[in-house]
Amino acid sequence: MLKLQRFLLLCIAVLGVVPVGADTTVFVNVNIVPMTTEVVLSGQTVIVARGKIANIGPVESVPIPEDAKIVDGTDRFLMPGLAEMHAHVTGTRPAEIDRLFTLFVANGITTIRGMLGQYSHLDLRARLEAGEVFGPRFVTSGPSLNGRSVSSAADAARQVREQHAAGYDFIKVHPGLTAEEFAALAATANELGMPYAGHVPVAAGVREALRSHMATIDHLDGYFVALLPPDSHGSGGFGGFFDVMLARELDSEKIAALAAATAMAGTWNVPTQVLVEQMVDGTSVTDLRNRSEMRYVPESTVNDWVIAKERQLAERGFDPETAALAIDLRRRLILALHDSGAGLLLGSDAPQIFNVPGFSAHRELDVLVAAGLTPYEALQTGTSAVAKFLGSNTGVVAVGKEADLILLDANPLEDIRNSRRIHGVMLRGQWLPASELEQRLAAYLTRDDEI
Image (cartoon, rainbow, N blue to C red; front, side, top):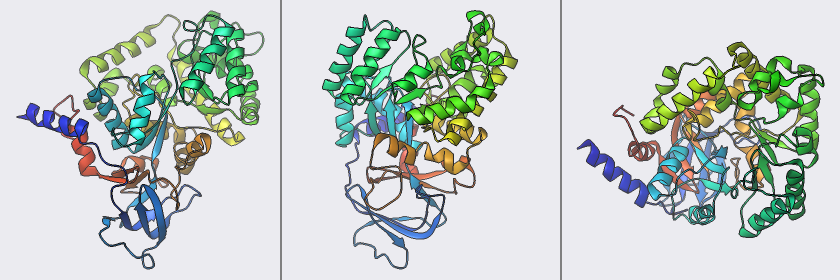
């Protein structure tokens, strides 16, 4: 019977696509966290019509349209939907895609940036916007440019032009490019107004990435190498996972200047700090395996993640104390980037090792606060900062904005962990209460745990 119920739920999740902007929805007597400033507006009515916020005002002065859907906002908090700015769309079958997108949306992720695109993603992006597929807004790269896919500087330029013509949103940079290939990629992309983002090729380095105005550097890639003193031997050539084993050799006095250079260049960072910490910190694989969100991940995938972490910790040259120092230095770098005015964007690299889509974005928010950001500043990285970076009409609660919203049962400005207390999500103006989100999630349980 349980298997039959899950099968029926899966059919509903895959086939029961929600229409865009079908009705007028009104949040009554709600507390608004607008993300335009660090304030809570209490006792408000918010009217959503045709997928956008049509009116906001005090509950006693805003009339409720007839036949509107009413959502009681009493003692609840309405904020913009979050973005996962380092995501991967890993499947092609409808059920695989729906599982991924359900996990994102159920956690309040209403926009994702796909960091390893393919041709099918162009059609998927269009179908999402048309409401034909359930899921978040989708910003996608094309196939990555890397040491294997690029054969020369001319080839790098050619591929950038082809991806621009095809309509991808940005170019994904992966490791292995030569300095000449990266320079050709950057020059061509800048000429076309095509953002490029991702890893920093070793042959180029962070300062060259900044000089050429790379849109985002992900994982803080290359920053540790840039912080090495001139006479460093680079741990004998062993840097480890994102160079964490270089930590003892870094000149931390250079962090402020490098952060200021990043701000001046206009390059944003997507730290994916939770990915790095989970891979190299002392959290046991048993604790990671037993996290509640792992019930939505196939056991074989969890086993692969366990093996990956065990392999990392057992790698020759790995030192737990150096890894702990690296975590601290990366957190100091994140705070320095923020304090210097360099843009930070929320991203966790989901679904990657122990990063379950949606859930991991909230873990990244926790880490950003641990690094020294306030809850408001951390939330900005997934809301208003994303809107500024993308130039989108989302990211704040204001009249005329797209109605991608989260209704929470507690104030996230008081405790960042309250961002997980989701009472419901509005996606493109369509209200999805927690009960419906839980039903969608239930279709993808891999264990018999209670939700």
